[in-house]
Amino acid sequence: MKKVKLAGEPHGVTLGQIFVSFTKVGAVLFGGGYAMLPLLEREVVNKRGWCRLEEMTDYYAMSQLVPGVVAINTAMLIGHHLRGFWGTVAATLGVVFAPFFVILAYAVAFDQMAGSKPLNDAMSGLRPAVAGLMLGVAYTLFSRSRKTGLGLVVSILVAGLVLGCGVSAVQVILAGVAAGVLWYAASALPKSRTPAARGDARPPSHQSDREP
Image (cartoon, rainbow, N blue to C red; front, side, top):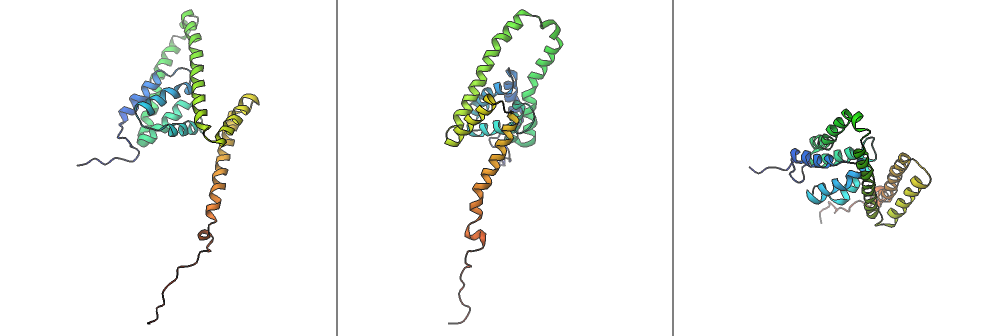
């Protein structure tokens, strides 16, 4: 009997594959959620083919709309795209599995490692690398957004507001959501004013019921 592909299972991916893939990404999650994005994109888009680049950009944006860590939020969205609720659970557990035990071990040994010179030297070298990863993510997202004139203007405006004027990122995100809703409503309004929608369309003509 032929297996029917379930909704939310576009590539026949299993929960185990989702968990393993996100565990691999979470195991090298240094520097926070934004540093994970290139690694996640390489695993999910380039290697697995579970999402397209455009979809990943949408997931990055959507992960900003809710509280929480961007890495976990993005993993949850991708997991839901692949296998629904249980895909969300598998992706979330995978991305936090390795960091949880690493942080737990680090917390236990923090007092002994806090003054370790090798550790401090390693962190000093790691921070610039993480900053480079974040700059790479920012440039990639900017490159995708500037394909249109509006995207270029919005990207530059937001960067100026946050970096130059000190505007809160939360305010910028909420303003972007409001602007998107208004833009969609304005673009959909003319379509609702077509003759058919206003009731101005003529009723179809009918042949006479009289005998010739």
